[in-house]
Amino acid sequence: MAVYQIYPRKKRKFFSSLSANLIFIIINVVVFLVVFPLWILGVFSPDFFAIKPSNILQGKYVWTFLTSMFMHGGFFHIFANMLSLFFIGSLVEKILGKKRYVSFYLLSGLFASLFFVLTSLIFVSDLDKSAVGASGALFGLVGLLVLLTPNLPVYVMFIPIPIKMKYAGPGILFVLWMISTIGGLPIGNTAHLGGLLAGLGYGFYLKNKYKNKTRYIGKYFS
Image 1 (cartoon, helix red, strand yellow):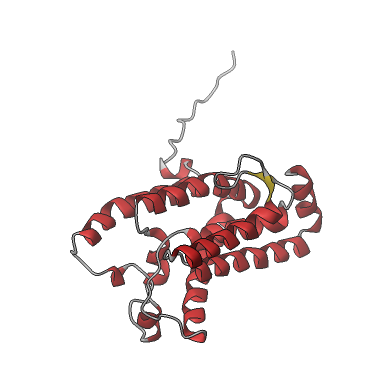
Image 2 (cartoon, rainbow, N blue to C red):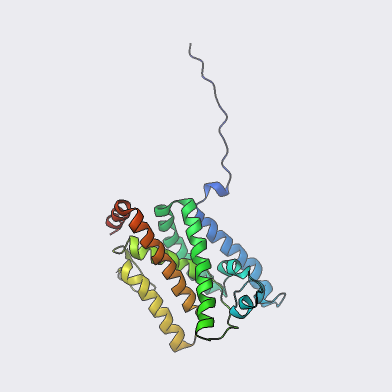
């Protein structure tokens, strides 16, 4: 008679079973629900979580490079960003893997914030203008897909027909820039551009280092 030894099944922790992208979405939503009401009620200044070039250039509130990535300026703002992150981030995480995706997402957001500060200084724009949102990191994901999956058909905003990613990525950036210019809306265009450049830069790196893999990815998602 055979004897079998039964080992207890290890329980997986809740957060370890979730995708990194879903965890990012949860963090964004929780931070918004906690911080936004306090901001509206005037409990504390937005300087504590929003990145402002004048503060950074004075060496103040340097942690806002990180906190600004997880805060949003309104319900529509966070809804649009999280909906986009749900679809785009899920795909990028499948391509990169969980650990690499986390690093890339955070670095894209940080670079977008840095680009926002530097362009404000170089072009002597309003140094007291603050910025919040996951858009910088989100555009980093878009920039990466522009290079790795250029022919991937995607739906943009309210356009009923799919557009290839290589046109949709830059197109979204241009449309938002036009909307903010014509409508005078406070959209962080330079942060978006910084995120897109970060994604394109990482895309070039991956295409040069993993030529066969990235070529296969491009063909698979076309």
